[in-house]
Length: 203
Image 1 (tube, one colour):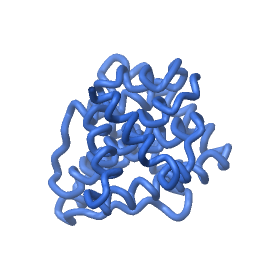
Image 2: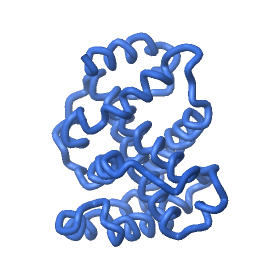
Image 3: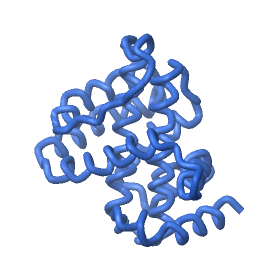
Image 4: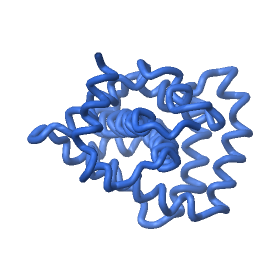
């Protein structure tokens, strides 16, 4: 897999896009189907050649690129989204060190891949299985990623399942970002470079 700065930015955009949908569904009970589809598709593209291939093309993470650009702009931050992203990036460190859990997740995704290909990764049955896989594995790591939102929606099983499936997609992007050489120092030392890379991508 290439180790380009542009690929790192795409991986972060994938992370932000998945988590923006987590926040939206937690607050409103609704999500953007195309963005959810792109996020969940990426979970099953484990052996993709590069970041674009993971997301099925850069266009599929344009909403994430826009949100990431907004976040990098001074004075235009979604603090709740930033905190959620940081929590997932920290979760990634615990996840990759827990080889047993990593292996269980990979095995679970391989087992589910056929159904996802047949029915689509955003099919309710596939989302339910992804959510169960997340709950049985990643949710056992501490501290857990806490999602704030409207209690009315967070009490609904379908909403909880979609949130867990999207958190698994966000974690997949976090793992990809780290594999490409990403580090939290990027947000301190590379903010302008990241913004420039996004502008180049967005045309």
